[in-house]
Image 1 (tube, rainbow, N blue to C red):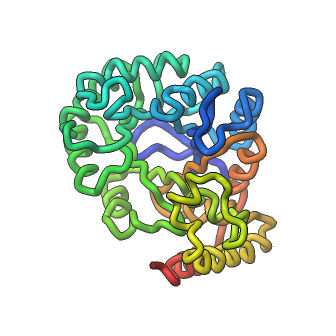
Image 2: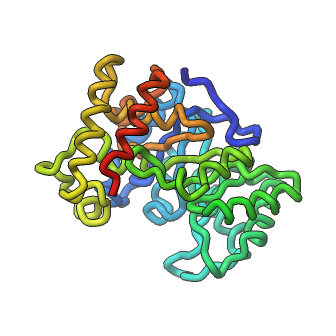
Length: 316
């Protein structure tokens, strides 16, 4: 069940599930950091052995530390790498579209690669023209620096514009990376998912486990200890735990029939959505093995529908 699929209408073939490495790299303290260099290498090897070949990072993550670490862990291995251009930078808050080529070169240098499979614009910003950005991306494709063009956090209209500009140059828009999970169904409401399907664009789902809320590890009496999640992630506020607990209970019940965890069932629900590729974050090889387990079974259509309905119940 770990067969590769094209990333949108491109010739880049990736696994139906990828992984995010935001926390990787020495000195990267995001969400407590990763398990260290050895665990990062083991995590990559575990992913590849399990049929997961798609790894997502960004220059923003640890200000380059994640890219550096992923580059070391994937050196000489058949991995599909995605990274992102950030429209601002600490030393230059307001970048211009003209800074994209140099930023890409820096990312490639940190990753230790001549090209990446997917390069994405991390966020849309008012001071950068989408057509100009897509022209820069097209130039990078022509130069052989990137194989596919993606965007992230783009609205349906912004995505359509990017798609149209690239199409004029004979280049497909490969993907739009947005937040999507059983607890965050916004791409279904704001038109992004429909636009992806209409245009043949992959929806790369970040935070597919809702920052851990869908793993079953937490409850209203056992909330995450790190302040970032406790304060900024709405699923961990006590008033929302009734909905979370009900959904996790159903995930656990369905998982028992397959010998799978709530997290694996939640990821499988996304995998079985048309055009969707989830990228759960991992810190170590144990987490890599856990998420890869979502590729080894299938939910029935009734189970997919039941989870869809339960996830909307008690929605704020």
